[in-house]
Amino acid sequence: MSSDDKPAETVIVGNYVEMEAEEGKPKDIKTRLSSFLWHGGSAYDAWFSCASNQVAQVLLTLPYSFSQLGMVSGILFQLFYGLLGSWTAYLISILYVEYRTRKEREKVNFRDHIIQWFEVLDGLLGKHWRNVGLAFNCTFLLFGSVIQLIACASNIYYINDHLDKRTWTYIFGACCATTVFIPSFHNYRIWSFVGLVMTTYTAWYLTVASLLHGQVEGVKHSGPAKLVLYFTGATNILYTFGGHAVTVEIMHAMWKPQKFKAIYLLATLYVLTLTLPSAVAVYWAFGDMLLNHSNAFALFPQSPFRDMAVILMLIHQFITFGFACTPLYFVWEKAIGMHECKSLCKRALVRLPVVIPIWFLAIIFPFFGPINSTVGSLLVSFTVYIIPALAHIFTFKSASARQNAVEQPPKFVGRWVGSFIINIFIVVWVLIVGFGFGGWASMVNFIHQIDTFGLFTKCYQCPSPILAPQMLNATAPSPHHHPHGH
Image (tube, rainbow, N blue to C red; front, side):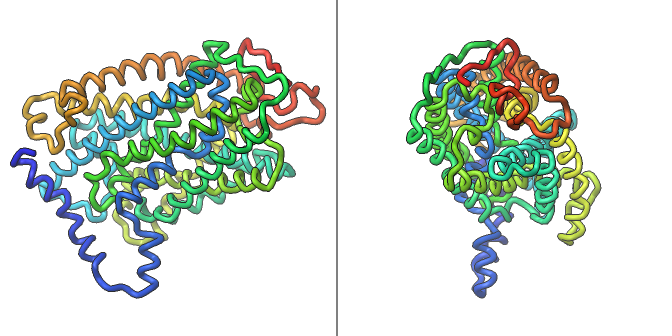
């Protein structure tokens, strides 16, 4: 480390010294308990936040993606996008530390201010970058929240089908609106821990239940059969590992943000131990039946274990809704000048308008499964892969910027040259495969869902007693795809 990096390091930690000094004071039981459950800022908290935020309802749609991709491609895409996602999360963390250090050298204080990704882009690259970053990030988080709402309705229906899915969406929209009371990511400590326990249970439930169930009669594994399906499936996996649009906010909630670098990779490795066995096992057991069931729960017989998994996923979706929505609340607060307001109730009140469009969109497009791929290709591709990679190249394009960088790239990737080559590869790959082919495929699939079910559909993919038995619980088959195995 060069000598001019040393002061920077102290500056970064500088602001946190006060926080840690406060930590040291003796406390009564109540304050201790509250800080244990509520105020998280350690590296472990960040790991829990990343891991529990990365995989939520996507766990249930991955077997559906495997049926579109086939076993080999499914496994390879998960490993590949897992690595890609970890690399771009690392880039985001480097840009954050760079921005923060430059600002703190100018004596800017972030005591009551939560740094967000668009501000990092603004500080390092100017307002055009900020606007593009802000537009993509907000749209992605908006639809991320919409997907959580749709998933809630889709899952609860498997326990209680007395109400249709649209009514459940109304109910869960109201429940999710309570996230306006959670001030920031510091306060998700107990939630992210609980959330991770829940996804772990669900993933292993899917794995074990599939193995115990065994293969269905005459099971076929015909994927990949159609190009449209292949790229739709690949894009859903791109979406799975693109959960780090909230990386900057999670980092900002840490007491020592520069420890974040490896955390995302470790979180991804853990997530792979959940997504790979569950998707492989469910696809092995049910094969092509999954093409018509985007929610894996639909294929399992009702049992206390399944109901438990459904309920845990519901609670987890509520938490993930908070994760996706909290950065939107921050943006909205900054836009109307309420961000540094001390009163929690006032802030909660001004946050409410953010929840309304989310609610509305979840009722218009209740296509659980196809909507993930569409959001993946059109939004995640830019927000999480292309923009961070380009921002890293442009921030450090001059020799002086590279020399004065707070963090030098690691040796094993080949320092700056290696980093830039990886970045260019990511931009080209994601543009062509993720945005190009993926966008085409998922839009074709999405429009097909609208043609078949219509907007505002009351109960997407629900079994209907009047329809012929083979249509039971079927998704709109993708174009030119004839369902079999029913």
